[in-house]
Image (cartoon, rainbow, N blue to C red; front, side, top):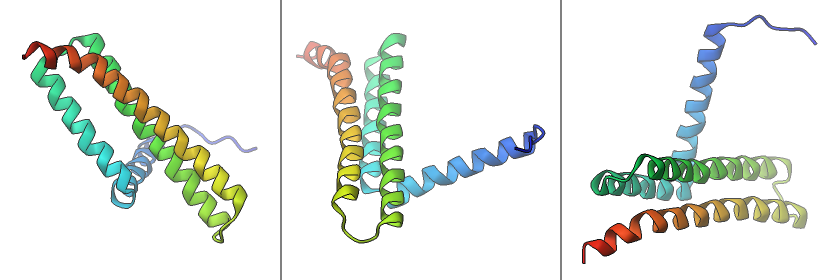
Length: 125
């Protein structure tokens, strides 16, 4: 294997590729747009309620988990569709498992949001 010399230019180009991946995610994946709206709402709520630093860490990590799992799910689905465009039971199983990862990430993020925000919401009444 040939070793490539470190290149700051090549490292910066990799950010362009990652940015393109985020653009594709938002444009092509409907659920990702729902996640963006939810993330904006949660961030706004965090600002309004002045959540603590540790709560921000939990919220930011939860948002990231949802997006990371959505990106992985979308990647797996795109690869599966490329490899096997026709319906196939094994591909369905792979896609279902991948989607389950997003679901669990979203459930965990929702639980974190409830833990952080319910006490603040209840204190308004």
